[in-house]
Image (tube, rainbow, N blue to C red; front, side, top):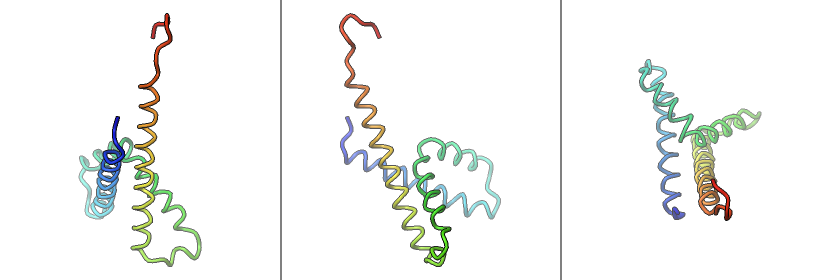
Length: 113
């Protein structure tokens, strides 16, 4: 069983990697991103980086509401990073809960699994 500190560490690490890969992809797109990096980002964002990607997309969707678009870019980046970290940590906690639930399941006497 993983401790809360370990889960927090892995959530922060995977969130940071996802945000850095996303920023690199946005910048590199303007200069001709190599195909290998595109494939790498797609694999990452559809596996471990999915909660972070969904968090950033959620903030982006709400940022287009009228009268919110005049807010500074640093505030958007801060909100997106905070929501992405929350989504990433929540997904790790949900996975831990599910894993513990399956691990505690005891087979019934006389029944084969």
